[in-house]
Image (cartoon, rainbow, N blue to C red; front, side, top):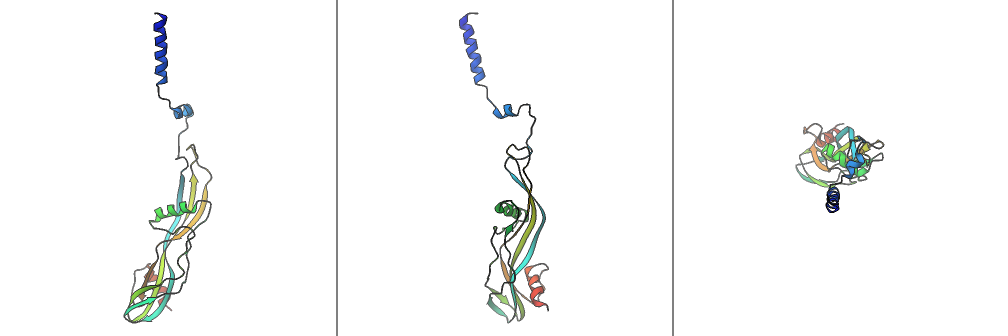
Length: 192
């Protein structure tokens, strides 16, 4: 074989090697046997003791006649959306939203100081109310490390928030659905 033909073969071989795809991650992990157990940078949140409770925030009992009346019942409670622990508040509340199926207020927001609304009434004693559903729960959160091979420190805390306000009136002679805001208003304002 001539030197010319040998040189051609060497050049062709070098070109073939140069065109092979280079998988840096495969080389870096070769022989290490390390498998990812989680998505790098992702925070995983687990919940315990989640509750959704109908809660009155305003209310009053008045003697009424048949018709319509506009009222502004006094405030009896305030709910504040809050997150304890070191988890980012927005992440905690968004996660609790998914768990409860509720559209929750962001951290720091409180139920309104005053409400004013119109309601249909019947003759007799009527309880006027405003309220919401309060959601709460305890979380455990951990974030996957950058290699995807484990987690950082575990963070624990509690989250409380509330959803859209509801208003209404219930006649003290009515029999509202058990557990509803109407039922709670009747129990609180119509008894005793």
